[in-house]
Amino acid sequence: MSFPVVVLISGSGSNLQALIDQSLSGALNINICAVISNKKEAFGLQRAQLAGIPTHVLNHKDYASRELFDLALKECIDVYQPKLVVLAGFMRILTADFTQHYQDRMLNIHPSLLPKFKGLDTHARAIAAGEEYHGVSVHFVSAELDAGAIIIQAKTQISIDETPETLAQKVHKLEHIIYPEAVKWFSEDRLVVKETGVWLDNTLLPENGFQYSS
Ligand code: GRF
Image (cartoon, rainbow, N blue to C red; front, side):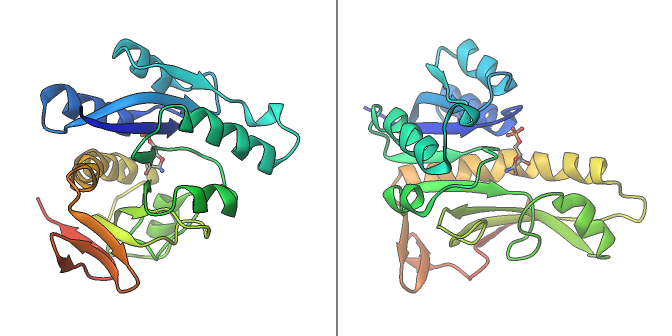
């Protein structure tokens, strides 16, 4: 039996697609057992359905509080007994109870070289700050937003005429490489989180994670 994974999305789902493609090609030995979205119009739901993956929509607006939404989300996820929960463009701030429940078994991808540029509009902010490089990080999810232990990063140079849109495109390409890679490591039991940091194949990674280079 391959490794059960539940993916949470809110939008286009191109990272979800990268995971689907690699699991279909056999590069990634995971079973995406469900895709859950908080938005019914998320295009990623169609991608999942096309791949024959069960989908669920839980609209956060139907719940009286963040706590109640997270509780319902947890119940929906846990039906599938995933070994890993993958946040792939899931645009919700999660409660500490929720993040604790999935501690060390929930990953997120964030479009910046963390710890720089947590939160939104990262591409525009990196350009405005005059950064030479921008990029993407995959990290374990902790209670604090975009602050969990970093597993892998990939970077790209910001060119003179860069716009947030062109930069987002460059970063997206890197996302589709490093997210499946991190999921692969996790599913093969090669990643361990300890007090000291993240270990890959019994080697302690730097604080900003494994540095991917093409
Ligand atoms: C990505 O840029 C990811 O880094 C961020 O949300 C976006 C999701 O894109 N967390 P997609 O829905 O996977 O295309």
